[in-house]
Structure formats: structure tokens, C-alpha cells
Length: 270
Length: 152
Image 1: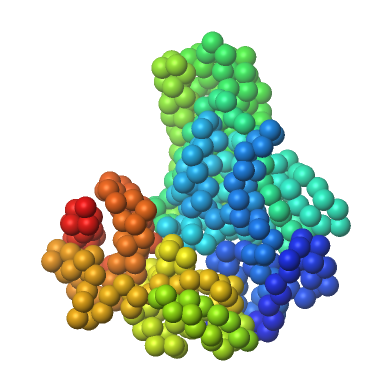
Image 2: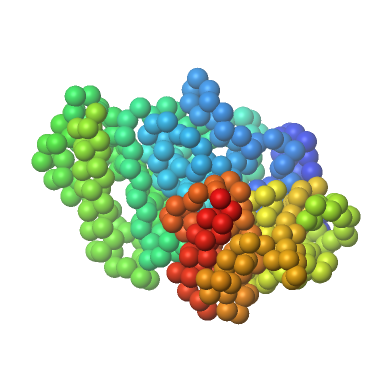
């Protein structure tokens, strides 16, 4: 029982939601799984906004903020965007994936959601409505302060004709992951044209390994130099009670190499 | 506050506290097949079907599902007329204390409805939100496979 909750709002438009947020009367209730007791007195039911959808558009696949993890995980992704389905299909548990929403996870950014990492590798765009409507590249969005007074309305995933790999490491499947990694590559005749490597959980805010990415572009994916470059990754893992920093960094390097091997096999097979 | 829920096919008008969880509402209205386990969405004892999909009722505020449809274990079967999934779990020795069983049965029911021929991985995926500390999972998997075979 959340005894502190006194009021529910059921707005029919984004503007009405924003008014309630700006007036400090309540916060949006998305999946509800991240709601802490004593946090708020008013909640905003978002169901009437119809933000539960996955639509193909010219700019990519648009996912409504209220779309559940399982809907995204079971969607028939046709290209490298599958890594998003892989990530969300492994987060939390099946009954929770029927509750947790993409927008709620981005707003709250709990450690278990594994949302930011694949979105970074896919260069997603996060659309928000606040004092004005804005579309943020995911990397910029992740720098915004949590709890800002806006509403996430949609996430756009641009087409991804290349190959992607998603990896998640946890002690047991249901546990918070200690490391997650998303690798997305586009190649032409075996030459890497575009590389996006994103890591999460091992660092406090998921981010891209842009220095490594820049060194990889222009190399043959089979070039031994690729593994050498991957082994030079320099990050300081956040403290984890179960794993040493050395272990996590070595794991990251190993899994990056494995991801490149898998992608190389796929490129060779085509 | 007043809300409406369709529980096991019957429309109910209920008076609830705005911060009440679906687990509390259901148990308070006699649906005691919904079990309180961890209260944090980890164990799956409280799983019910929300519009046909398994959810942890301890993680859902009742006011957020106003006008939606809920299925509890009482909606699938009675003591005299158990559901085939329950029968197969019993036959496989997958039930001991039985506390986790209602949630598991509902998750399996939802799985078989959408996927009548699940692979072992798909069964494991569907049940990844359920903890059982009595029988272990081998017997549960066996019971689910037998239930799927029987339904087909």
C-alpha cells in the first residue's frame, strides 16, 4: 500500500499531463515498477494518451513511450535493431516485462533496465514534450537530469542495415547486470564503415566508446589490428560488490572481441 | 476512490485506496489464490493475468488498471474441477507447498494460449519470474511440457 498517494489524474492530452507535472501535483505512472513508497502524493495515468505503439515511419521505427518491454522484445525487427529486442527481452522477468515501459525506464533509468546501452548503439532519438517539444539524440538525453519536468513521448530507432550484438552479464538471469555491451557495425566488402560500441552498468551512465570507434573505421573487420584496438579500451569500472574492476574490464574486452568475431562470421556468411 | 474491474469475466465495482496494490485489492475481495510473496516483484507468487498477460500484482496499483480485465487462479479452475495445467503439474510432482503454483499456472496458461508448442527455452523464459523453493524447476518444466502436449 502506498498510503501517501491521495490522488490520480487521468488526462487526455500531453498538454494536460505537462500542466499537472509543472504544478507539482503528480508524476507520470508508466509501468509502476519503479515507484517508491513515500515518493509522491499524486499520480498521472497515461493510458488515455495512446502512447503504446510501434510504428514504421520513413525515419525509422517509432516506439510510443508507454510501450511495454515485452511488446518491443516480441516485435519482428528486421535488421540490426534486433539488439533492442534482445536487451529488453532479457531485462527483469516476464511478468515485469509486461509492465515496464520504454519511456518509464528512460525517465527513471533503473540499473536493471538495460535500455540505454542498445539505444546508444542504435543512435536512437528520444522525443520529449516539456516547455517545448524536443528530440534528443540518446547520448544527449542521458545527460539530462532525472526527474526533469517533461514527458517522454516517443523513441525513434533509425534503420540499422548493419549487424548488431548485445551482451549482458549478471550472476543469475534475474540479477542486475554488472556489464552490458552493444556493438553495432556497418561494413562494405569487409571494411568497417561505421562502428558504435556502447557499454552500460560497468560505468555510472551508459556511454559510447567513441575513441575506439574512430580507430576502427576504415579497417577490415578481419584485420588483427581490430582486436589490438579493442584491448586498449580504457574505462574505470564502477565499484561492484561482486566483481573486481579488473575482472569487469577484462570481461568487457573479451566480450567485445567475441562480438566482433560473431559479426565477422555473419559478414563472411553474406 | 471508485473503480471498475472485470475479474474472472465478471464486472466489479470496487472502492479502493488510491495507493492500493492490485494484490491487496484482489486478496481483500476474496481472491486469495493470489499470494503475497516478496512484495517487490521478484518471486512471482502474486502473478495474475492483466488483459491476458502475466504481471506481478504487487507491482501494479489498482487505480492504474481501472476498467481493465484481470484473471486470477479462481478464474481458471475450482477445487473440484482443476485446470489441465494444474493436473499435469501435480502428476509431474511439481507441487509441494503450492504457494508459487497459482502464479506459475497463470503464466503457463498465458504462454500456451499464445504459443501452443513452446520450446524448453520459451517455457523457461515464460517462467523466469517465478521462484519455487520446494520442488525445483525440472519437475515444473516436465509438468508444463506435458500440459502443452495434452492441450495439443
